[in-house]
Image (cartoon, rainbow, N blue to C red; front, top):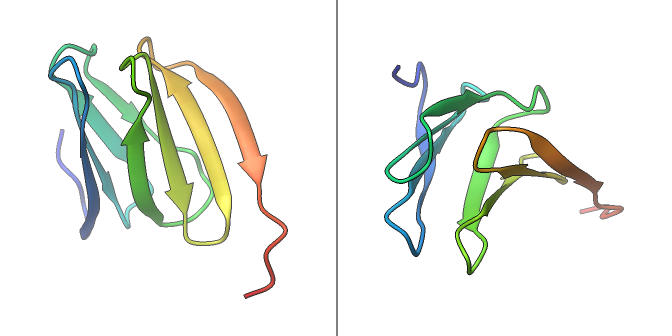
Length: 85
């Protein structure tokens, strides 16, 4: 699996996990995580971060939405900011 647009973010977790996020609205994970292609269907993904224990991955989108997944690729949270600028 490859991204079809710009790669905007890269995150490396504490257990060797690797995730990349793209303007094509996908995240690709590998390393000690199962390989997933995640698509939050929200907007361009601009940022990524693994939890300190490496068990969750958070992604921030262009329009203030943050989504969180577990290592099995299941979405566990969706957070919307109220920022105006």
